[in-house]
Image (tube, rainbow, N blue to C red; front, side, top):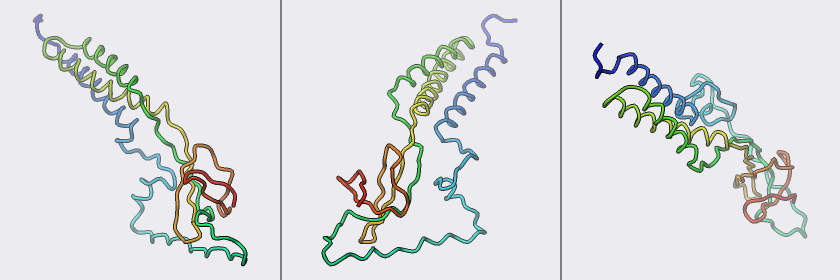
Length: 183
């Protein structure tokens, strides 16, 4: 066996590790589609079966009648929908650095000569991408999107960090453009 040539099995193993890292990172970040959609998920709604008839919108409820002495409330309305949504966390870059180092070290262990350089750079890039994706997944949290139908018929959607103490149909007032209170 010659001394300066890289064995084809080592090259194949390096390419397999690189592809596996890229596929894993794509799956974690949502680039790679999955079959695990939930009802109301935008991906599930966008790919509906064309043979089924489209759903019609819910009928618009008229604004409640006011007494003679009540003042108009432009920020008051009725909760139309409450939806829990998973939100990816913000990454600090630490996961990308750690993943890049680990991928670079792994790529450096495989091959020799030019192959070693290519696998080191590819491993570092794939590891950085995967590390950042993993950090984002670890920091994800749940937010609640509350849709309020205002008295003028328009809709406003607010994002809440905690589960709201309201139910669909409750009368609420939007305070400071971002929080809700009973009206």
